[in-house]
Image (tube, rainbow, N blue to C red; front, side, top):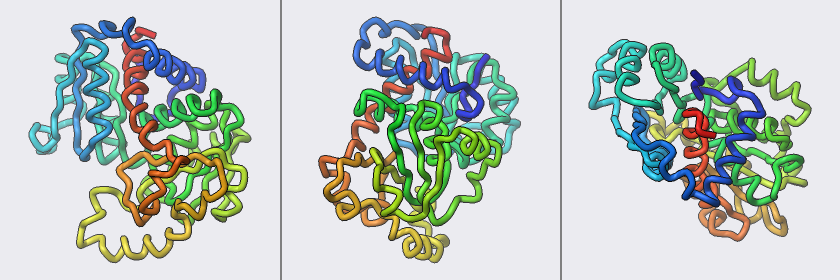
Length: 306
């Protein structure tokens, strides 16, 4: 049985296969419409979500299956129950579990108990499902991923972790352009893998980093749950000052064909300008749509259908 908790735990061949099949299913969905008939996906959320919830639930429906949504606050998971035991019980009812939790360690506990595949819908270290959709979008736009140069600007975090490894797995060049790293997202093992790939580098200068970039990507500088938290206001203000030179705006991409990506939701006026997502360079909403198709490809792979 294969879980999908972090990209470093699957091979480059697997990632490329899922991306290719996701594009195939997107372009010709009818043959797959009953692939997961009679199957049920449990969706467990500790962190709020829009794209992850909608894409998995709609994806499961379009594949002929059924999805159950559960907010942790409405389950026994809230009161400190043993996560391995809870996952073991849930897996007796369902065929897949997708969990969006605050801590990767909690996902590992669930996977340890589950008798069905567990999917990481996001944690503090990784966002592997987002990365599948991202590289799927790149492949659609360029007809390839090999040699495409992807630059990530902002704060190094869970999104950049998964994006970086998905990029090098698919033969893309990846440049990290950041002034700071989220310490909660640190992964020394994965960093060693990236550096050994020959496709990863770091450049803290936005103008230099973007010179030959095909894609420039960013994410929120402040986690969604802290953005309007008064207790985080001072840190939010500090980050705004520190990261503003890394904002993706019209001036940065002026005269360039560089495509703009963002995993959404965007804090306009912070990591992106008010209008940059509406420029011809932006492929943000194609990227958001592809969450649906990439989730379908992932679930089909985990269920042995592709």
